[in-house]
Image (cartoon, rainbow, N blue to C red; front, side, top):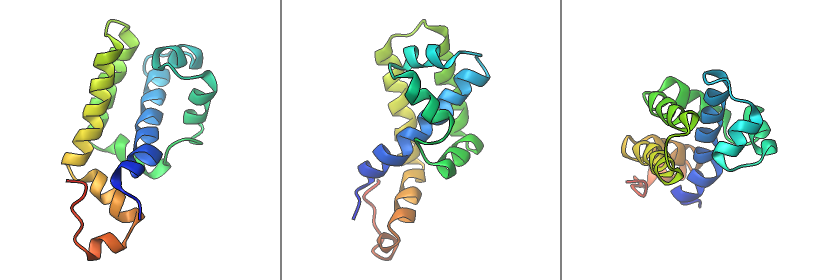
Length: 126
């Protein structure tokens, strides 16, 4: 049995970061090194996000097609501008994850990873 927070750490956060990294590089034309510095991660981590070694490709595709993508792009804009404090960026990042929980997206990902939960009518994500 995996609690929803484990799904967030292992799948959701890396998927959000992957989409964010791709946007920073594609739309803002930042280098991997610049992205790494702005996100306080290594350049190797950025490379792994780009090659989908970290994250979950299915969740990444769903994020890119969802209304949450505009939230990720707004976060990307803030990060690229360099005008925002890291604490605000963290709050915005957490806001994306919280919105996924509120919209039931996290619940869907959680139940897909543990089908027995749907039989129990699990509501742990809410």
